[in-house]
Length: 202
Image 1 (cartoon, one colour):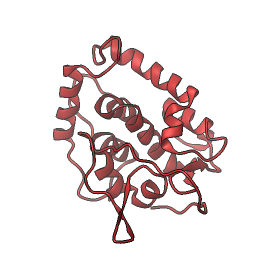
Image 2 (cartoon, one colour; image 1 turned 30 degrees about the vertical axis):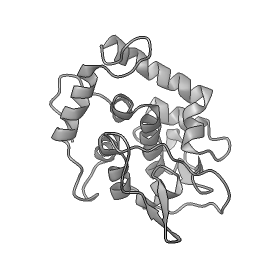
Image 3 (cartoon, one colour; image 1 turned 180 degrees about the vertical axis):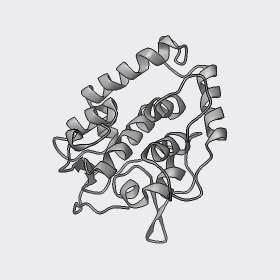
């Protein structure tokens, strides 16, 4: 999924420009999961896994490493986004984006040019038809650009158990919510609270 734009952005940067901090931290969690560095725990939370960044051929992004370091106990995505160390990591990501004219001062919302770049990337890289033959970078870019739709396709069990995608109750049954909010499909809903933990891959 290499793109032809003049400036290449990392998936977490694209997610931040497209849908904000929650989307960027979601990409970080998806970066950590296949490495064994995070696992789902109580419903809507993740915990640190047994692997660490030093065991990987390609280290996770600095944002992903910071999120992993903050998992001293199971936490939901909302809690991670608000953690001071993660907020600092996000601020450090914003600095070069702002200097490149992609974030507006003082509120650091995306500029018109940033929104255009994200739209162009979504057109260049539509949602994959399946998860087969995708590289790790392909998966992260898909999640950055397509949000919940990509999470449901690429890491459905992890995303649901970790609270990265929303649930709805219909007739007493828990279903995935198929009406994502926002252009990239990231909702603001997370689960926090009881239930058993535990691993398992997608």
